[in-house]
Length: 100
View 1 (tube, rainbow, N blue to C red):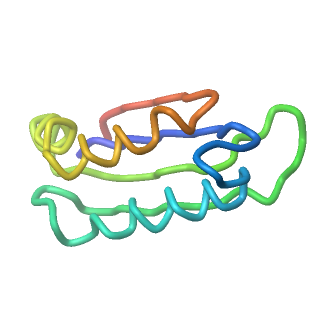
View 2 (spheres, rainbow, N blue to C red; view 1 turned 180 degrees about the vertical axis):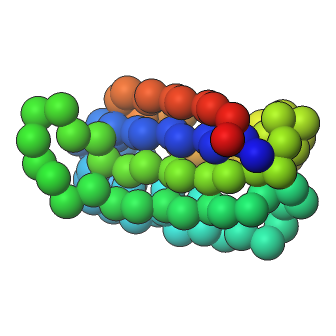
């Protein structure tokens, strides 16, 4: 099994939305992928309430059957569409992938 964790910070405003609206939109779009991708065991999206200086705005915590399933997810058209939506809205990105 492979765990894929991605953390985002978003711009203060972009595309007519403030940071909170951006985070909610991204969360909704990630959640819309549930059940559409094979090989995904867990797909959890959380909005952060910690306002500390090291805090990120949103986290994706997901688990995949295998490294191959993660790779399929990464190139899937639905993920690529979501990535294209997020990229101009994000400020920072952190990723951790590991095997259990």
